[in-house]
Image 1 (tube, one colour):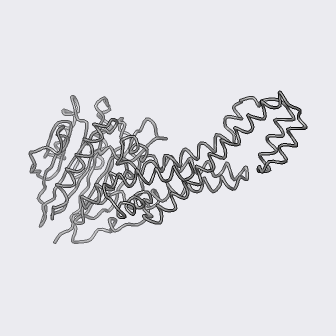
Image 2 (image 1 turned 60 degrees about the vertical axis):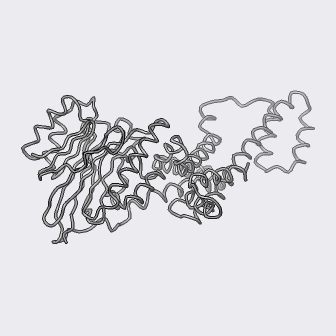
Image 3 (image 1 turned 180 degrees about the vertical axis):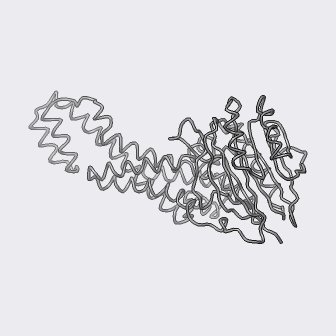
Length: 420
């Protein structure tokens, strides 16, 4: 199993690349390595082998203890103790088995036992497995769902590190560090300075963008309207607009007089909007494309609300819409702004593919991961609302807005559209 599990992971990773031969192996290793690419993939597989070996050893240890619990009821203790001394077992395991033999009882399952060493071992190993499974998100929607919770896995690894350090269990300290490093490598780069962040220059046109998924059931109209008026954005994008929300948003016409509406999507602007794409980005028509004429430039805005990938069919539809967006945006030579609720996090392999194919960068870069959903469960919060820009646009600042009663937090982004 120590070899079989890493080999199986490598096989699935190779299969997801769609390549053959040696190039498939290198690509598979790079997928598993994440930001560390080939070397990271090799170290990753070695780490998986070590974790699997530790889990197997733990299971064998538990199995031996159970056997001697049963044998103690049938055989003399002296015989069993002498037998234990002859076995090539670790000293801590010998002590545990001898304790069981001498006391002739099965330890009672208490909350202390449940929250003890074994549960922490299984917990850290489970977090590592989930961290690994996310790299294979192209294979299945279930594997893709595991890619979104890197922050939670990181916190779990840190808790495990402190626990095993307190217990002075060096092997498990190393296992916890593997869990931490796997996820820290995905999170930390979002806080590093990035060329997407820049100080405003005279040759750029300032543009403030506000976006928010309103939630159909949300009735806190005043919270949202007050927030928009306080921010006074140049562009405001809304998703899940339905029923009374249509009338409420119309009250913003005094500061955002121009609008493009389509389905549950609404795009408002202080500058004249021209709708330029009458087709649909997918079969559900969950996207709007419009243009704004700026001095010396034409800005293309694409607002999307992709499917929630909780089934194989919806997973396929979301990915198809992302492909359609990338195909539309990539050839553009003018400034492009792509925003909305994409129902995908920063760490999904499908997200990475989308960013690469679209030639876009996330406005979050340098400002942190900023989880936006779900507001009712902040411990499970992940970043799925995004603002993307191409190289013709500077990112000056990005921040989350307040809770406006939705299950999503708004995002506000200050941009500078570069002039010729």
